[in-house]
Amino acid sequence: MPVLVMKFGGTSVANPDRIRRAAKRVGVEVAKGYDVIVIVSAMSGKTNELVGWVNETSPLYDAREYDAVVSSGENVTAGLMALTLQEMDIPARSWQGWQVPVKTTTAHSAARIEDIPPENIMAKFAQGMRVAVVAGFQGISPEGRITTLGRGGSDTTAVAFAAAMGAERCDIYTDVDGVYTTDPRISSKARKLDRIAFEEMLELASLGAKVLQTRSVELAMRYNVRLRVLSSFEEQSDDAGTLVCAEEEIMESNVVTGIAYSRDEAKMTLLSVADRPGIAAAIFGPLSDAGVNVDMIIQNISEDGQTDMTFSCPTDQVMRAEKAMKDAVAAGQIEYGDLMADTDVAKVSAVGIGMRSQSGVAAQMFKTLSDEGINIKVISTSEIKISVLIDRKYMELAVQALHDAFQLDKAG
Ligand code: ASP
Ligand code: MG
Image (spheres, rainbow, N blue to C red):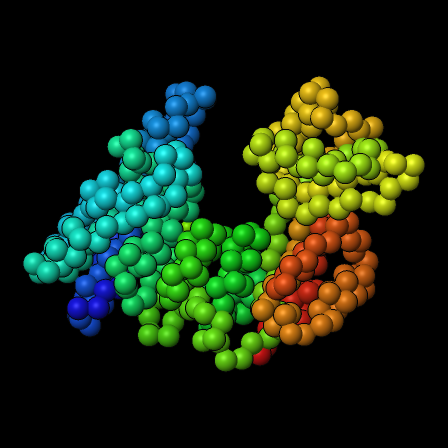
């Protein structure tokens, strides 16, 4: 029988009543003839509570025990979901990650899935089981310890199972009814997309649209898993939600598909660094070693052999970046005049695969921002994305203006 993966996020399994509603959706697919793998998140708020308990108990915690604690929320919902399905006379059982087993790396709290042998679950399907309920977000390391996949990791569990089991589709049930052209809380004109290409979704996910864990989209793209994002709170038709799929499956689209933003950006500038070969490596090597996620980089023109180097990173990594730079000075690797941190900035980006073949998008973006009197501090581009760093107070305005300028309220 064909296999379908259905993933339910925290709000969709927030209490026994919601679990029952989700189980009814599963029942619909079972009735259509699918063997279903259900991936569950913890009840909404649960993982945060568990993380809080760990921090309260041991601020500099052992990451292996952190994983032992925070993975437990999913164990509860997996068991409850299996019980609910059994009450509906659907043959089902729960699986914790290690039982499958979901084999991961040892990187506790940020482990990667390496392999999911399908045999155990497939054998149960062959014996008449119709639903395998799997606890998302968790796995087992080569050392036999419980691991977790990073916040939002159940999405990645779901896609990995879809790839491993050759599922027809991976449906991600959440509290929004799909992927939008931008955040509907910021622009009332935001429009739900019927389809979006993997590459675009990847950019939007990593740029701060929090619908899917970035890693899950990377996996879906690599294994060509058709991914559907849809609401567990609405009656569903077969074409509900947004399908994340290969570019070839998208017939028409706008040049720009979506406007994303990220509120928590910081702009750091190293003043008067020596402009010599190797200086970029000497700066960004230590930043990377310190775990700072550098995003945009600008090296200004140099004068008298000195230059200014600007980069952006998440706001909560500013202290780490400053320490890494001071340590590099102490180690004699670099010298600079001053280090300035501007933490009142935000990043706004336009994303669309149409940019590959159409020019003028950047010009239109800059003109739109200038018409609103918004100053651009840093610019970066990729083949399908243009990002700008601006003062945070203009973020909403910029998103709305760009959404209007690229006419994203209208389908392409
Ligand atoms: N429960 C985990 C979290 O809140 C994993 C997930 O829900 O995807 O991050
Ligand atoms: Mg999530």
